[in-house]
Image (cartoon, rainbow, N blue to C red; front, top):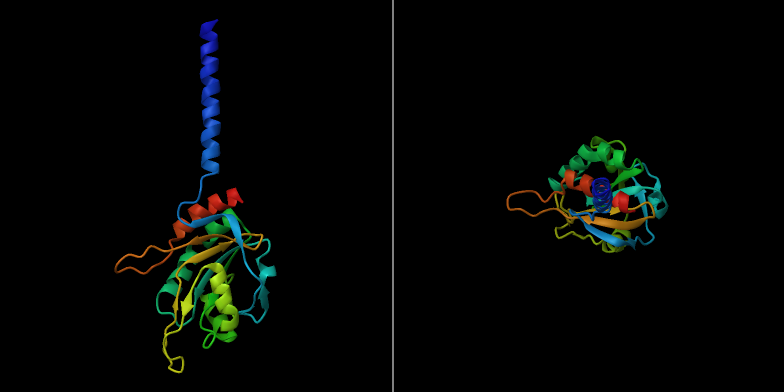
Length: 208
C-alpha cells in the first residue's frame, strides 16, 4: 500500500511545484523598466501627426504605444533609438499586434509636418511622428516623466535640443504602464536596448 501511495504523493508535489513555478514565471515583474503596478493617467493632449491628422488621447485607446522624445536634426540618440525600435518592432507586434511607435518632436520650430513626413518613414512606415507647440509639449513631458530643453539660440541653424533618451510605454487604456531608461556608460550613447523592451513587454502584457 505504501509503495503505491508514495509515488502518488511525489507526483502531486511535483505537479503543484510545476504550477507554482509556472505562475511565478507568468507573473514575473518587469526587470528592465520602471513598471507602474498602478498605471499613471495621461492627461488630455492634442498633437498633429506627420500626415497632418489630429492625434489625441483617443488614438492611444486599444493600443500599446511606445513614446520617444526626439527631433529630426538630432545627430545621434534619436536616429539610433528609432532604428533600435524598428529592429524589434515585428517582435513587439508578435507579443501584441496592437502596437504603435510614436516619436514626439521637441523641436517644433524646425520640425514641420512636411519635414516629419519625410523623416519618420525612413525608419518605419508604420511609425508616427507628432508635433505641437511648447504649450502642449511642456505639460505632456512632465506628465510622462520626461524632459527636454532648448539652450541654444534657435535663430541659429544648427542648434541642439537636450531631451530624455527614455522610452515610455502606454497601455491600451491610455495610461502610462512603464518607463524604460537607458544605461549611461562612458563613451557610449544612452540608448534603450531593444531586447530589454521585448523581454519586459512580454511580462507587462501578461500582467495587464
